[in-house]
Each structure stands twice: as structure tokens, then as C-alpha cells.
Amino acid sequence: MSEQTGMITMQLMGKNYQVPTGLTIMAAIEYAGYKLVRGAGCRGGFCGACPTLYRRSDNHRIFTALACQTLVEDGMCLVQMPFVPVVSRRYDLHQIAAKPNTLLQHFPEIAGCVACNTCTRACPQGLQVMDYVQASLRGDIERAAMLSFDCIACGICSSRCPADIKHYAVGLLARRLYGKYVTPDSPQLAARVAELQTGNLIADLNALMALSQEELRARYEQRTFETSEENKEPFSAIQHYNSPMDPVDYKDEIEV
Image 1 (tube, rainbow, N blue to C red):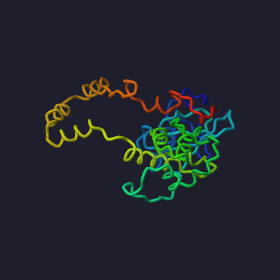
Image 2 (image 1 turned 180 degrees about the vertical axis):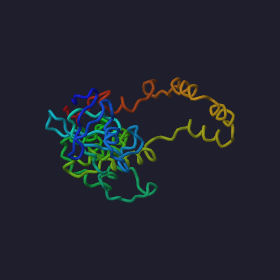
Image 3 (image 1 turned 135 degrees about the vertical axis):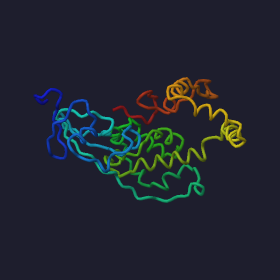
Image 4 (image 1 turned 90 degrees about the vertical axis):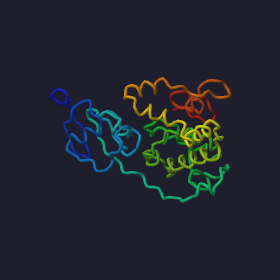
């Protein structure tokens, strides 16, 4: 900690900088005088454009983070990493089928997964990355889609994978297959689309457009959810398919 109140020292690409406490890594980089022409997108933790590697002064490990969501620490040694490239494998979603071997056919490298769980430990979203890769290998498209639902494609998992798996691309195809072929058609959605096409909801939409930001926020916070047919409780993919926030005991889980 610097003698100057509220200032700390970080090391960025081999050079020390004094920055105020309480800044995110991204804000600290900009405070140090760098103009971010890449590695900065939404600044809200959704786009995955700011993956960062860093070490702490009292720990030998490499840590991973999103620069826009992680506070800079005294003695932090960091560098922003480039996006992990992936060779695009073109496919026509209307021509492929959701079969047990579809994901393996398009991403044969998932067969090289050694179940080291490094990808899961590296994920800044706290996703069970290894589990959805293993689900993809088994042909369980639904579980792979659910476990990867919150993936932001930052690529940190791929940068740490000894098998060079591009996890985010696997998860993306799983979610596309699940959405098109596995998810049952919603009669409520079809009915609502029909209402929109007839113009019956124009008055309601105009009323919403006239609301203030505070009124819209109140409406959003008071919204209700449909209940599932199984237990008559609001459906939650997180609770049903396991996450660090609500762990469920599956046989292929590894405690770390």
C-alpha cells in the first residue's frame, strides 16, 4: 500500500503503477494511462471481451477474472489476454439433427477431455464447464445447454485447457440444438405471437412506452413466472441443472 492514502500499486505488463483503491481492473488500466481499443465491451460482465490473468503478491497461482467485474488489489500483477481463437466449423442448424453424437461429430476434441476440471476452476462465471463438456460427450444435449446457459464466451476456459477444447463453441451449439429441437413448442408463445400480429396489444405496448423508468422497474420486479408441470413451482434452470449457487449431487461431479 502506498503512503499516499487510498493508493495501491499494481503491475501491468511488467511496469508498476499507482492507482486508487476501489477501481475495477479495467478502470485501473485506464487510470494508468492506457486507452482500451480492444478488451472492453459492455463493461457490465456480459460480453466476455475483457478476460484477464493475474497473480497476487502472496500467492504463486494464476487467477482469472473479467477486468470489468474484478477490483484491483495491492501487489496485483496482471495482463489482459487476447481472445482464444477457434476455427469456425460451419453448420446449417436446419440441416443437422439433435442426435447423441452430434456434438462429438462437430467437436471431436471433446473426446480428449481428461476431466482435470481446470476449465471449471478458471470460469469467471462459476459455471460447471467440465460437466457440460462431459454431458456433450455423452450426447446429453439438454444438460449441456443448461449448464452452459450463462457462458459469455470469454475464452478463459479454453486458454487453460490441456486438450485444447473450445468449450464456449461446444456450449453454443448445444444451446442452439436444444432451443430448436429439444425444447417443446410453447402454446403460450404461439398465442402471444398471434395477438401481436393482429394488433391487439398495441394499446398495451403504448401504455408501457409511456411509463417512467421507475414504473418500468417496479413492473419488472413484480413480474410473475410460469410454474412447471412437475412441481407447480417457478422453474429454475440453475436449481434443476446444478450450479455453485444451488449444487445438486450428480454422479459425475468432482468436489474441488
